[in-house]
Image (cartoon, rainbow, N blue to C red; front, side, top):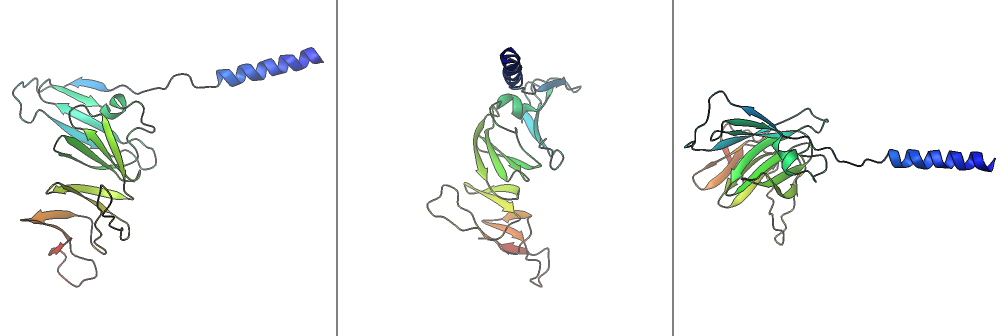
Length: 196
């Protein structure tokens, strides 16, 4: 009986160790030659593309079209950031470069990923519920979101501005950022509504 118990304990311990994950699997980037060829003097040198992925599947990816070397690189983010859990996230919605940083708005993961524009390595993550689009104006980032008013914290590194009742699409004219007019205002829906 004692020998039988030791045998069962040995099998359980063996199962426990063999079920542990030893190696994290990182999906490598795929490189594809572009039929248009190499353009060493290309300006711009390339273009980033955010792929939305299916909602709920956590499959948003970031690709890069390299005009200089003639490559299309798929799934660049996961290879450059192997320690980020769940990779880029769920439903990529917008992407912008401002200065030396690349901003990727990931809607259903409720975040904006801030990356180095040259290396695609993660700098930080900004949590914003249900964020949609990002635009820049005079050194500030404006992110649209489908949530209620957000408090402005003057001590915060990132200031948030609330425009209750406005639609999500924004633009700028001369020196002011604008949103589409409020839904229930009775104004012409195409008329600009100052935000801030």
